[in-house]
Length: 341
Ligand code: PLP
Ligand code: COI
Image (cartoon, rainbow, N blue to C red; front, top):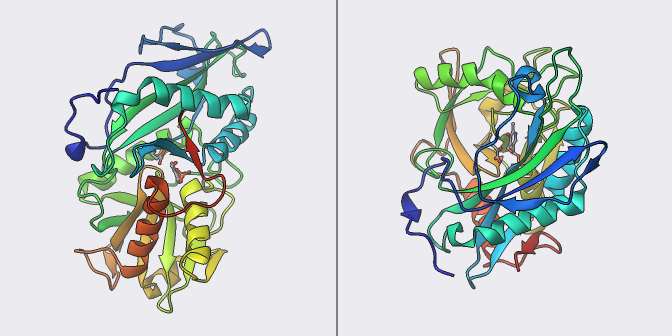
């Protein structure tokens, strides 16, 4: 299989149309058998539920070329489970978890020539999603749905790759108490668009959202969970019912404990404590683990000791170990790596 002629090392995090995508339709109470198709365009009613009432959910997974030339994905079973949780909360039919994993494998295989080679720093981003497609005008869930998966080769989520970024404490909330912050619904991201544009206009890379009820506790950013390192090298990560249970964060907690021998704590993190941490990172499929150098809280700056030039030592070790596991240079825990054959 010949790779596409793409400048892999200079890819940003953008959409590049690939050859094949997967589609399965839910109609009359069941999923059809699904198929790979060529056409990237979707035609639907002007009154489709997704257009009027945003009934849509998604996932994000990556495929990697390992050091020995295999193509693999990372823990897609956890994305399948989270996708099922998102569907239930959004009154959508569950796409069976085994079919989810199978469809991801099929689409990656069909777009093999777009999977970036080992060592380029790029990966193939996989986007499974589902939306209500029949016309709905009274507020209620759709009755017909499409489940789809497309792929796009990507580079780093934040410009500058692994260089520390600057974020600001947001005055806008991303999720409501008892709302949908814990699932991966498009509506959460719609909520964050104004906040991210405003942050970028003011020179910040991302928003730190605090809990909407008390504005005293750290939640997450628009697209990643937080991970902090204490001065005595403990890993601390926020616990909240309104943040997304990140697969990357859960994996890093395991890596920290079992590969690096660090103590790990998942608990409520008060914003007041943040100034005392030694390192701060954002973790997610797209972000991997991106170091935060500075947090701006309405003009007051928290500058982490690791500075703006380099990643701190513990975040750096966590990143190296996780990417080593993903790229096959470090042995993975049982079941984490799923080979595309
Ligand atoms: N939090 C939000 C809001 C996200 O969009 C993402 C991205 O998926 C994450 C956290 C990280 O989750 P994961 O590691 O499963 O990609
Ligand atoms: C991911 O990390 O997969 C995400 O979905 C984050 C972002 C692109 C919204």
